[in-house]
Image 1 (cartoon, rainbow, N blue to C red):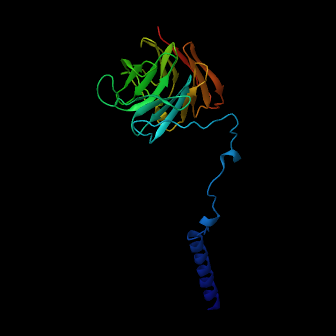
Image 2: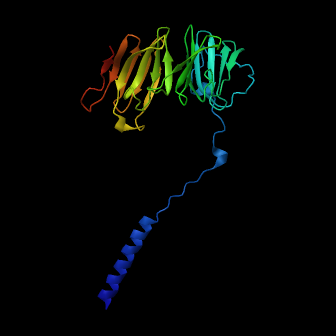
Image 3: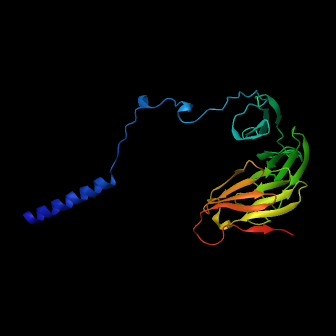
Length: 251
């Protein structure tokens, strides 16, 4: 009888042990009075040589600035909420704003990206799949249809215009960059990718500050430099084998 009692007692202890593991709870005490209310900027960044530039009021207030770029002595701010592009002088005074949402040829359905050069200002409408080419004062010059290609972003030099495709597969093929000349004629395509990867892989792009486009593709961990003269892999740490870069030219 005693043996049976001890046997059931051990079973009970084991069952309680497993139950306690499954229902284990950790309590964390948070005291709002001990939280930091603010952190001074000079404690984590070097502000030497920087200046605070108050921006002039715009007709439509800036509510959701998604892109900020500079070119020459101008500051460009894109507002995703209002679909406006605001251009300021370096002292913060307003130069002009572009508010051109609509379905006409000189309007955009969705202002997705923009890029400024010494001579032109390009506005990307990736829903309407077109580019509005303007002068440096924002006055409309012409529309460029990009059917057959695809663009999430644009980049331009005085010689060429580049469409940046993050992961779609248009008629022109699965390539991350499509190049056009100033007149809008297709010239080249760079950085092929595997469409099966979908949108899970990371892609980042920005100017190199010298008239080129830097495009980073993961998981290949490759940084490409794209210019009107061609495309070159600058950094490649891929260990998956194969060739992560291939230049494609057109005749």
